Image (cartoon, rainbow, N blue to C red; front, top):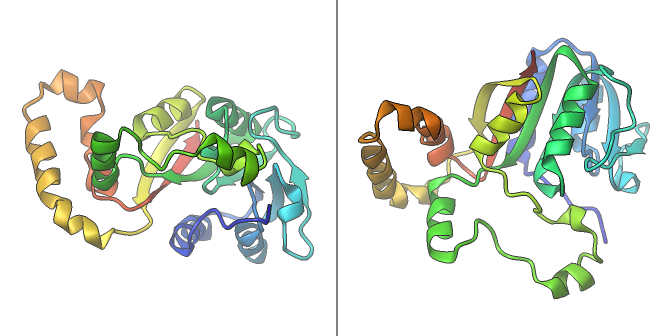
Length: 237
């Protein structure tokens, strides 16, 4: 199978904007894919290590990718990196909890993780789930065997919603400091009545229930009215 671009330009730019504010240091780009993020970070003065389950897809002269399986132990010592960038990768893992645990392990205290993942809780996807029972288009066994050649790394194996992502981060010593959307989906303006309905309904919930279900966070504009992806900045505490 040919390498694929796993994230659009809007996601890349939002991710790189974070790194423009950081002090250059050692960064792991995981999964690196064809190497767009690795190349940009290298040009910004970062000491880039690129990793991917398919290192042969790296296509940037001068940067060689290391084979890394996010479902297993990563081939790096504890506290090896100042930064980890994970663009549209966590949802492709079979064991996202292991991936976050390993990322935390190899990050230095005070290090940063910038991670992106599909926004499964925007209003469009919530309504899609309501009517179809699925957040994304199901993959058939036939497609898995013939098109993807039984390689699950090309699939969205883990449909991670924001509350689950936050739990994985905080339980591994990673504190979310900011959440962004890559863009506003213009067609969602027609779904705004549903957004208002959700806001009004959940405001009737007791404060304890709102906190328990992270209502204020998952119904924030960046998520409920957000685009296809979330860009999440985390600090290793």
